Image 1 (cartoon, rainbow, N blue to C red):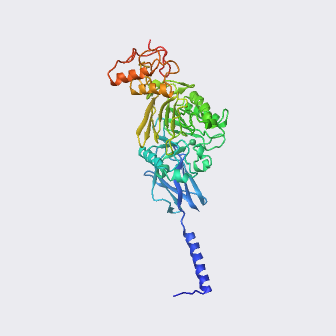
Image 2: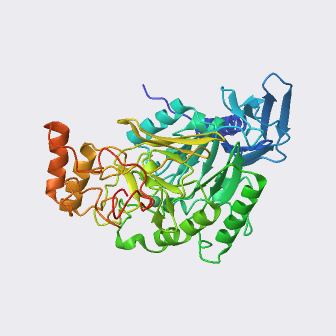
Image 3: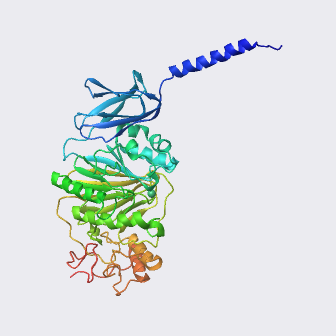
Length: 495
Ligand SMILES: [Fe+2]
């Protein structure tokens, strides 16, 4: 059977459809397309951000845990929402929800804690970087970070390799970003994003850039450096601002100074020797260590090289107190960490790179946990696949240990073990530096022949596994060597 409609009926039907569409549109509620997430979380304030697919008049409903509900309304409809909450008590938990008018935009009630009230409060942070590809590895590192439950998330940059922050940042860590302080550094893959629109900074610098800033959190002062900014230059505004900021922080009594940025000053991975290491990489190598020396920065963290690395303590381009590793007491230099294993394809160690400053290199996805008290800064690098891949600590006070000379201890970790034999073989056959190559190889010269050769590695292996003779005197140790340098290298052995 065929039904034939008259032209008049068709017109009426089309009109009805259009009217229904208009009514449906009018009834359509704005829905969340991003967030909510926190920015610039401080002792007494926070900015809550979210995006809706239609312009809406946003509202934040919040309350101090157990306190009365407070509502903050936006004054005009927008897509990208930013609502600042002020006059919050320090170190306090708050509940919040974002709404369109009276309609909640999400079911969950989120919870955040403002920064702790005093400079003696502890800090629990996680540093990670180079995450943004949406890979299973990124998901695993994200799950690891959630399990660590930090107060602070420090991102070393390259938030997204896909061009979209929504795909690989905001949708990757929604509960973390809704409830934790998130302070990202800008990476070379992040340059096209409007940084201020996404990440309003906690304070302003001289040239109004949102991409470098600083903040206090408990007993630590953090400085986020923009290593991709054109203001990063000798005599440039950024360097001047950071220099003054660090001086202010020390005067104000900040116990620990932590600086972080994307490109690492020291690295032995993909960017250790590559010809395109050029400008940005060389700039951080040239400009950051003098700044760290001047202000006695405790820790510099960066990303960009997709692996984990830890340097010896470095001061004035020389290694100091490396022999104290992994439990440093008042080391004379700054430790540099590379944490670029947040999710993207890993980079291997480059044998052509300058390895003098590198204590540890691990090819693994990971995140770095920082636990800081006024007395001690403890660092643990954790891989979802491998577990703990590094751990060390820096104490501010206490008697500095004396260097104990142990012949055969080629890596100066205080004992003769398999890693010493491996270190000697890597030196002989792969061209790796020995810890003490800058002065003398007397430590690695296990059989006291006057030179380092394969015999020394064999001597150690024979001693460890076949009951052979111990390394020559001085062994197992002879106490402090006054001629030893910061690495524990000595031209003469014990005196
Ligand atoms: Fe990068």
